[in-house]
Length: 444
Image (tube, rainbow, N blue to C red; front, side, top):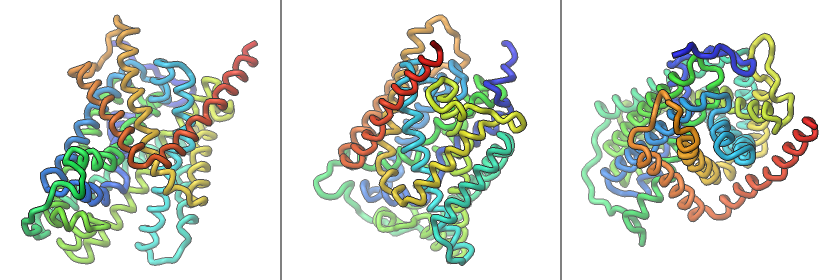
């Protein structure tokens, strides 16, 4: 096997397997796991199903890691998922993905998480500060750190991810050992006229939202020392680690609070720790959520700008976004663009609405990305990838089907917000046509 390429579009290859694994886990774990188990329990009311949907969601996430690992082995390029869509379907779908990432998926998610960070931070320091001001300040700080270099951004992200793992592990261990088990109770599987299957489907939407984010590590493939090996392994290790952590948290929450208590809780992780060790536990979880949200923001600021960079390199965005600083070897304009976009949404106060249609747009592209693997396997039948999806085409088909089911369920439950998300997506079509026309004129 030949040595990996040491340069990529002017970016520096400095990230290792450990960095890749921490990026995968950091892209998935935000603040959701500390509250989402309660949302799941409101849909399914037995301990078996509360834990079972997290296992089912984990299976989908593992199938996704297999698919993205092979895609990474076949296309170890800067921009990751953007590059997969571009090479499979052409510039328009890839551009629309980057467009949605900037205006809906990444920036909206980061804005909401930044506000969450601000609220927990204010509680910890006991200082009354405007949420939007703290959110903008932390986004500005992370933008600056990532402009210094990919190594500094990755070091901060990895350190925060290790702290996140320790906080979640402490929640699980303390909850198991010290929190009294909830008394046994009989609870119906679902409420109202919902069937068990429909209840599971409804519960899967918040579960899959919590598992989302594995794809963002692929954005920085151009800065990994050996992306064909390390990104594929990092995806598998990172997703598997998250599945274990999430399932353990769901188990501890339902064990300590019971299905009904969990469903009634607004902050299940806090309630478990309060049962176990009193108010000190509640303070500990507040600190854990603060670190977790900060880690998520750090990961997003490190990864997503590489998509805008790749778009600009393809001539489908402002050329300045493709500029790499000669000293730091990072796309500083692209990083600043991500920070500004997230800050604007945080200040505007519309982030809550944006989050409600992130899932329908995001999983549409997940499904298309899974289908891209079929395109590459047929088109490049003679290519020998260093990793291949076990059980393909069934494993890949399972992942694609799960994505479409999540899209349909989300649109059905939130038709208006989903329509807004798709309207923003459709607005990218004339924008892409404009950039394509400008590119042709420049080449003429």
